[in-house]
Image (cartoon, rainbow, N blue to C red; front, side, top):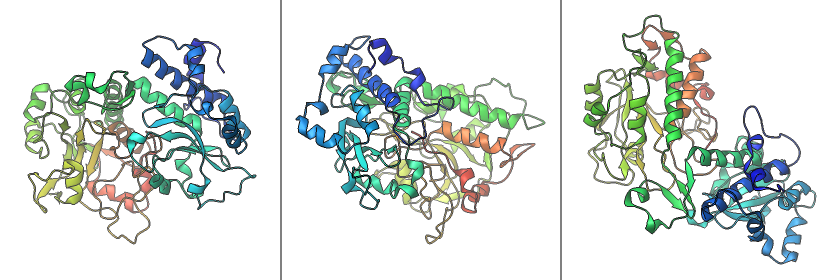
Length: 478
């Protein structure tokens, strides 16, 4: 165990990155995982107590898991791999409310929950719940699960989520080294996506309470300043990749902002929201077509006129905005239950009837900021055709969690899917990830560039159903 507060807080060399990958071996990297775990425990302690460094004696005295009778702990330890026992010997026991999604250290033996697997494993339990899901998130909770056979971890929030991770051999991409999961959480803390606030919710201003979701000490924010920066950078990289392949660019200043505040006011974009910050900072693409069949909105009056989901405009709900519309304005789709659910939730007072034409293209996500797992940097790619139109077709477009896009869907391309391996359940995929994926499609030559920008019509996205699903898939992340 680290011996000074400074050592606990200094974890740069323990974080997983491309340059410092997780161990891919036959045991838990218990020292690395313990350092990341202890950082989170210390972070929470500092936030709760208003200090700059943790009191190590106080941390050591806060015992919850280890406060059980010795015979209970010994019975669990006897069923654990030596590396997991070494992890327990190296960590501070977190108080309840360890992190946003998880409550505490559980070390619960869980083979009974995974009857589909071969659990006859060296006379030990194969599956162990290391951290339990916060009970604030509902019933049937599970948590961060460790497979002692493969030395990988996954995070099914609930027992129902276990369908997304077993059989393990068929869902291998949903299992990660434990240090990868812990690193993802720390990354979200450092960027400000999740913050720690010891105040009681009744002490918050209305604006604060309505702009985040809180579980105990931890607050989830629909967006943060770092996400504005990273999404602007991702789109600028994507625009650069296209423009470097276009011989004759439109006569627009390279540094001209995409939209002015006045133009966004006309489109009823809320004053304080992610999409306004993004659109007023990102560079204007000097081309016509930003993706196959999707055009850049150089005509700002036309941009305002085509917004159909912006009636809410203010308050807790941030409506969706059509960012890049189909270049062929006849490529609409009929308003239906799927569109209703994604753009209006459970509201019944919507200005559409089933069958009404809706413009297709890339939309920002609709967000109720105070709700759990809301993601204001998200998107929905609304296509003028159904993906996987034949329900019996077991091939075709897939989502990040490996599941097939639901048959008949026109909105699920590039999305997370049912399972979020690092926490959460419902939020939309982030624009930053989409622009990064599209950049890869340009640089790899899957998408080609002509005189007006990216070539091809919007029907190119149907390639995801015709053997090229990996080109239209975003790898799992938070």
